[in-house]
Structure formats: structure tokens, C-alpha cells
Length: 134
Image (cartoon, rainbow, N blue to C red; front, side, top):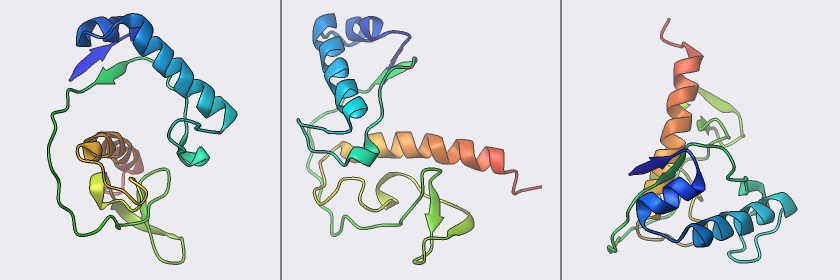
């Protein structure tokens, strides 16, 4: 895992030409601002700009993943698990591949790591701010 305070610093750390990384992030940010992902057709509600340091990169190796289902628990933006009626189950959070529809209808090998890191961080922050243990 590499961490950097700028895209240029991250590009250097991971051995990618600075212009390639900044162009890629700029193109993605434009999609987020416009609410349309022309390249990957992501759901517009999931698009967020990448414009705040620190920036992270993780080296991924090719692997095969076999999965029975891409279903899972429904969560809100705070990673709180939702009941079938859409209301929150107090004190229950989910992250990683236990969350429904992170990978849409396809499961990409290695793609679960990003979800686990991202939603795990969100869930940890939310749980620590909840103070439900007091």
C-alpha cells in the first residue's frame, strides 16, 4: 500500500508516469462532476470526485475468485445495515463483499479489496462516533 499527499507523489511511488495518473483522475473527476461515467457506465449516484489527499494505491496481483452469489446486505452511506423496509438496524454495520451490489452484476477478482478497505473505514468511523457501547 502506498500513501501520498499528491497525485504526482503517488504516481512516482508506484512507478506510473505522472501525466497518466493525473489525466486518468481528471477524466474520472469530470465524470463525477457531470454525473455520467462514459468509460465504465457506473451508477451516477456512486460517482465522487477524487480530489483530497491523502491518496492511496495498492498493488494487485491477478487471481481467480469463485463466488456463489454477488448478493449481500443492503447498507446506507454510513454502512449501516438496512432492513427490508429500508430502515436502519441499530448498531449493525457491513463492509467488503458482504454488501449487496458493490460490483453490480459482475464480480471482478480483486475488486472486493477496495470495497473492504473503503467501506471498512467508513464503518469504523461511524461505529466509533456512535458511542453505542456507553
